[in-house]
Each structure stands twice: as C-alpha cells, then as structure tokens.
Image (cartoon, rainbow, N blue to C red; front, top):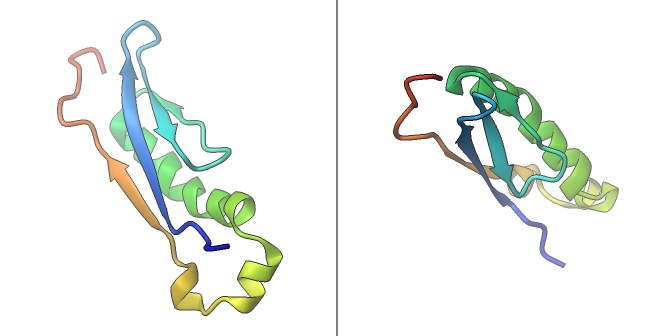
Length: 85
C-alpha cells in the first residue's frame, strides 16, 4: 500500500461562532481559532505530529527513506477575512 503524502487544510469562517474552523483530511486535526494567524499557529504546531501518529505505521517509519516520509500540507488560507474576524 502506498503511503499518503499529500494532505489538505482549509480555514472556513463560521459567522455565528466568530471563529475559523478547519476542513481537512488529516485525521484528528480539529481547529477553531478567532483569527487566521491563530489558526496557522495551531496548524503548524499540530499537523505534522497528527500525520505521523494517524497516517503512518511503525513499518512505514522504519522502512521508508526519510525523504519519502515528509508530507506535503496544502494550506488554503482564506482570501477574504470577514470584518468581524
């Protein structure tokens, strides 16, 4: 089985809750933050660890060259920030 190496993360504004929340295919990644900068802080702090913990097996880590373990995270930053954000 080929190990997945590309993941996506998107910040979506919830006007009612006044937070950005994550849409992602990284298992375990659930972000809610009042600003995009705060969202990015959590994303960059947690995403790699969650990918290693939830998308890579011990065999993957032991048998795969390091250059093939590095995942790509496609981060879709909002193009327009709501005034209330």
